[in-house]
Length: 110
Image 1 (cartoon, rainbow, N blue to C red):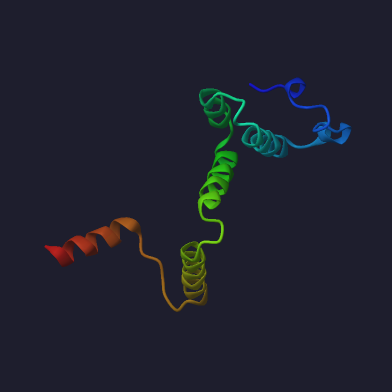
Image 2: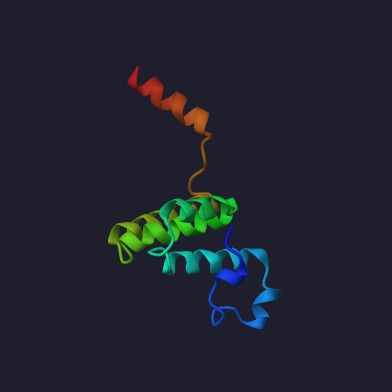
């Protein structure tokens, strides 16, 4: 586990100690990512796996985005998801339970 003493003093300001745990986790993740060349990968992995699900998901999203930060494909999927959400909220279409959707698909190919 990384302790505050291992981080550079210039990085820690007195006001930081009042931060909520989620913000601490995010800052530690960024510090780990910035210094990952000096931290063995197994230690970095252990630190990340100690984070809560929300922080790991946020980190995963950032890592995926780092491969294609201006991806037209990602933009297209976001637009499609927003369009589908708007259709459901407007009542234009309705949601189908997963089990029912699978049953319908199986019936079509049988």
